[in-house]
Image (cartoon, rainbow, N blue to C red; front, side):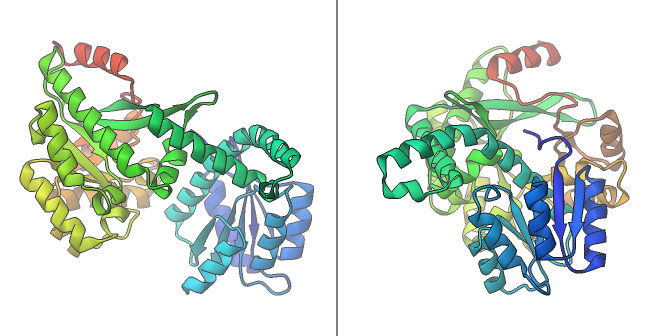
Amino acid sequence: MDEPAMATLLIVDDELQVRKLLETLLQYEGYHTHSVASGEEALALVAEQPPDLILLDIMMPGMDGYEVANHLKNDPATANIPIIMLSALSEPSARLSGLQTGAEEFISKPVERVELWLRVRNLLRLKTYGDQLKTHSLMLEQQLRERGSETAKMNVHDLARLDLENALRQAVTAGEFQLHYQPKRTVADGQVCGLEALLRWERPGYGAVSPAVFVPILEQLGLIVAVGRWVIEHTCQQIATWQRGAIGAIEVSVNVSGQQLIEGDLIADIRQCLADAGVAPQWLEVELTESSLMENIQHTISSLQRLRDMGVKIAIDDFGTGYSSLAYLRRFPLDTLKIDIAFIREVTTNPQDAAIARTIIELAHSLNLRAVAEGVETPAQLAFLKEAGCDQVQGYLFSRPLPVPELERLLLTTRGA
Ligand SMILES: [Mg+2]
């Protein structure tokens, strides 16, 4: 799901240099920007031309960021505009006060380019989705108001969220999820060498909902453990079906949430699912994000070690934007590093991204890990990755994630059965 074309962002900061820097970074990412130097100007401009997102400095003379956010979030006309608070203060209390006003995100100064871009992009995606829900929610709000209940005080955002939560609970009970599979290819000979299983949800009456929207909610509702187990079970059965048929043996990776590792019995689930399907562990890989690995390091290392001893492969997903240090990386039992999509996007035009991608590939190889690049969309990106020694690639250049029948057709033609 892409953000709306040419989203307009409003930058509010009393410091000229910060405004200039943010304008440059965001315009470079293709956004329109407006900048103002005070909270008062910000409120006036928002009333006139509501932006798609606001970057709001906390410490400003006159009206500060908290006050501006309070105004905007308490006005139904502007409550849905996402706000990213900016602050040089790193204390958790500043962050909390910012979030309490209703701001969606918080970034510390000095602003880091990739973090800024990812947070802006993710929030805009959520807003697009929220806008889709608005009509439906307004209707619900009307119904509640008619009933005159306490809940009528809830705003549109809360209602849309509540509605989505209920739909997700229903999706879990009714088994509305599906898996699509995206092929990975070896850079050396272009052969399909594996697949990534990706969760899809077709919400009845709405159509496909982005996993970027529903997976975090499944996590917050504690439903990700059950859904994650279903993913593993379903994937193992699919691997077995392919092994018995014309497709043959193929490695499949599944995305695992940190919660499955900490709250669920991931190891027992995987062992059981592999045994039930009659699949050897070497055909399954689990992908964990860098940040989920860092949540409970000791427990994570010992769980992963047990999985690895069993023969299951382990990948770090979205590598490079999280917080793992090299010291930890060495202690995790790993097979694969997947370079975060943020570095691949402009790898051929941005020398910093190119340097980071090269470094991650070299790092992977020096630790005897394979390097996989996601989000490969152009021949130029592929040429760069080939030259840099990347092992595997995945992305729209070759194939989007496919439903099983389409994927099987692709595998049967390209694997030259
Ligand atoms: Mg992944």
